[in-house]
Image 1 (cartoon, rainbow, N blue to C red):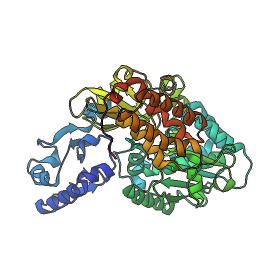
Image 2 (cartoon, helix red, strand yellow; image 1 turned 180 degrees about the vertical axis):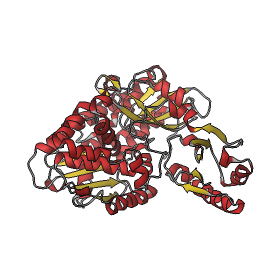
Image 3 (spheres, helix red, strand yellow; image 1 turned 90 degrees about the vertical axis):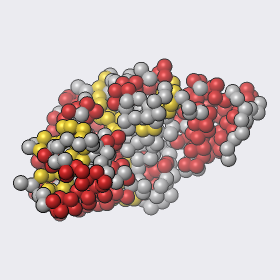
Image 4 (spheres, one colour; image 1 turned 60 degrees about the horizontal axis):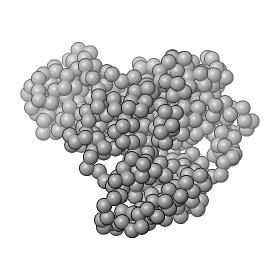
Length: 516
């Protein structure tokens, strides 16, 4: 009998030795005469357990966590192919609280299947949604996405259905779907987990968007720092094309759609949709003035739907199960689920897909297990490098777009970075301004010059030079950047700075030297 053994081929798992573990398992099986099928799956998102090896024992997947290649001989000796006891044994996959308490809507296949197998994908409802879209028609698809309340998961939170309808109703012979996979926010990795663990789901989501708005061409704009993702996506697109799920007359439907994978060049600002479109067109990634909106005049001047990875990958299940089902998750205007990513000083880092409505404290304590250092949480940054730093008293804020906006914060892409009580928050305020100065596209003065002046002002405050006058100057500078910047790069840099001034001002109180 052949036993299926799962070892992730996913960036975080590979970085801690998953490839070496896979090789060691294959060698040990051959040496001991055991018949195994080694499946390189994606990650379940429990990054703290990687490399996470699973063994299928009578249909039950038994997990062994933090496995190294040096553990493999001992695992075989303990009978791990039949779920044997070992120090690295965690237990049945479906009994791990971190996983079973989640609301897996978009990520339900990640970790479950071979990401490059069309057969595995089809066995788990893959391509059922595009087939259903062909049956119900483009208008019904847009109505379903609108009814779901799905909002852009890249950070802006704009309703996907409105964007799709705008593109659909704009007359043009050529339209495009552009997937923004330039995941550059600190503490974020959900796009990467999806693309490495279930790339065909993203492909299907793009196909559905194309069918709904009348586009026959899609582009995936992938950040250059994801080489493994790039390799997996290339193979997934090729597999879909070879099996008739991309290209002309898909499965005899009369619908044509193909995808081109484009690699970015490391610019953070290309995460902004118009800068990304400029880069796709072969120019420097600089933000465009709006209007016109990309849904009306986008890539190459044609109507273009720009959505991020998780937004598009949420669509197949919305079409399969209905918009009302998705809208039943969440609270108020924040419908559905979001992939929250736990990073920083956290005991159990990883990805948690949950419906909107829980609190930061629940995520950090119940899933993250508190800080890795064991010290108290002092600050939590949500929403990437432009997100506000939240103090302990705000950790019970409900995770909901509007609730966060009300306290001067944002959920953004769902990245959560935890800091314990050893952090110096004045340094974090300085980092926000410095990050903006480095990453600004330079098109508008408030962002380009304001961030540079911001670093200088904060340095004077840290050094104890005219602290009160510089405080007033910093507040005025933040007002200017927020009100006058062309895009969110400069407009949101004040968020982390203001939060430090409001909740952690004492870190500016002691004069000290400033590191260059």
